[in-house]
Length: 361
Image (cartoon, rainbow, N blue to C red; front, side):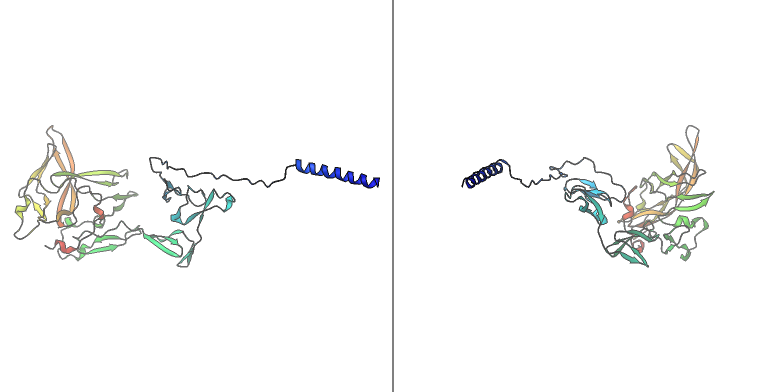
């Protein structure tokens, strides 16, 4: 009996000790760590005063914060919610390598259908040139091409027989005016070389291992009286591109050309002085007298411009006893048309070409 009482008291002491230890020890809890994302976007927007200058072929886009213009990230570059990938090239930001944060990704190519052309397969987004005349891009199974032969334009409306010909050493054909079909035989001094007849292109020839390149003369800086016309040429001993100038006079300002119209006509294409006279520039007078041709005027919306001219060298005597020589534009023929332009009009080349019927009157 005494042994049983001792066992009960011992068990009670052990139970109290266990209960005391259980109440004093804190329970083990699962601790969860909360991740704080890096804020790449900040509002209100603070953009630099000047737009960034992107490398050729890199798109200038609005950032992912819808705040500022930025250069789009390219294939393989890091991207964030602010630095977006170039969607114009089918790129997207792949965050799979940054799990579980998903903050910084890498620009990858969207999977798309490739293209097949002439037995050659191109991947989606690939740019290629099937020939020298086109630059193409594969976009999800479709091929879009941009023509590269954009500088060649038809001759102006005065040319009744335009023709496209293959030029030596050039990929793109050039427009020329085929004078061989004209009924009126031109005198030898009016026949220009094929390089001169090419409209809008550079005259090109070989000279002492140098490819001679010359741009067309610019329009005269003045619509009447003496002005300046310029061009760029490397036709010199050093084969160096230089700016050349020549004097030009479209028509005299003091002469009323309208009074010389024929009855019933609204235009006079060419006006010529009745008597020879000397050229005068800055007080210097030409040694010889000339009887030049000028472009006339119209009473309607048409304007008269030269379509055949050449450059002559004129010697001048100056009041101080010195002499000087100038290149002068010599007009051979003009025509009246609706393709009017002001001097130094940089947008004139965007104008459309009009029908030949406009100059039939």
